Image (tube, rainbow, N blue to C red; front, side, top):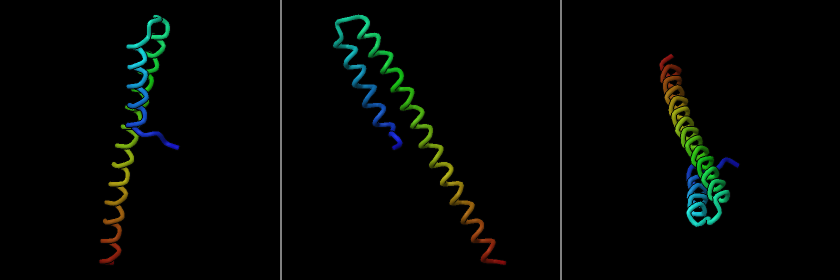
Length: 73
């Protein structure tokens, strides 16, 4: 199942909140690393979603162009 940008951002926000509440340095650092990872995954998901939209648009334009050329032939 593909995760969404929002899902990853929520996990990052949770990790950031846990980092703020942490009293131990190693726990804080772990949560900050986790937040950084989740934010990276969120960015990757956002880019992937944008590329899918772009690809779908290109396919739709190609189908439209093909249907126009087939209709006139």
